[in-house]
Length: 299
Image (cartoon, rainbow, N blue to C red; front, side, top):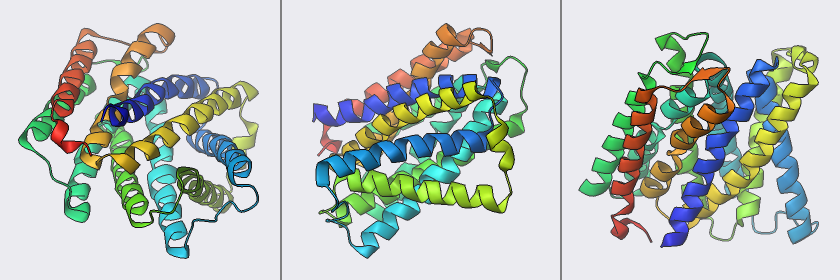
C-alpha cells in the first residue's frame, strides 16, 4: 500500500520544482508553446530510448490499435492542451499560484472517475479533498505569485490545465485497466507522442516560427523541466496502474506545497511568498493526511 503513496507523491515533488524552471525560462524570453514543445520533445526522446533499450525494435509488442488510440488521445488532451495552459499560467500568475490552482484537478478527476470508472469516494476522502481545495483557494487569494501582478481572469489558464489533466488521468487509468498487456513505458511514450504531434501541428498551422527565436537559456530551462517531467509521468502511470484515481490524483495535487517552498528559495526576485500562501500550503497537507488515513481506498 505504501508504494502507491510514494509513486503518487514523487510526481508532486518533481512537478513542484518543474514550474520553478519554467518560470525562469519564461523570464529569459521563452513562450508557452516553445516550453510545451521542448518539454514533450525531451521526455519523448527519453521514453523512446528507454523503449528501445528494454524492448528492442519490437517497441509496440503489447499494443492494440484501440489501446494506442486511447493513450494518444490522452496525450493530446491531458498533456498537449494541459501543458499549453500550464506554461501560459506560469507566465501570467507565477509558478506558486499557477501550481496551486492546477491542483483543483482532483475535483475533475474524482468526478470523472466516479462516473466513468465506478470508483467510490468515502466521507473521509471527500473531506480530505474539500480541505485540500480550501487550502488551494487560500493560496490563490494569498496575494503571492508574480511580482508584476495578475488579473483574476488569468486563473482561467491553470483551471483549464486542471480540467485537461483530470480528463487525461481518468483516460490513462481506464487504458491501463482495459489493456492489461500494455507496459508502462509503451503507455507513457504514446501519451507523449500524441502530445508532440498535437503541439507540432498547432505550431505549423499557426505559423509559430517565433519559437525558434527564443534565447538559448530559455531552452535549457525547459529541457530541464522536460527531464523532470519524464520521471514524474512514469511514476504517475505506475501509481495509476496499482491505485485508484481518487487517491492518486489528490496526492499528486500536493505539488503547490513543494512549489511554494521552492519559489521562496529560488524565485525571490520574481515571486512573492506570503503568510497566506504558507497557510494554504499547510491546509493542503492536512487534506492529504485525511486522504491517506483511509487505507480502504488503496488496492
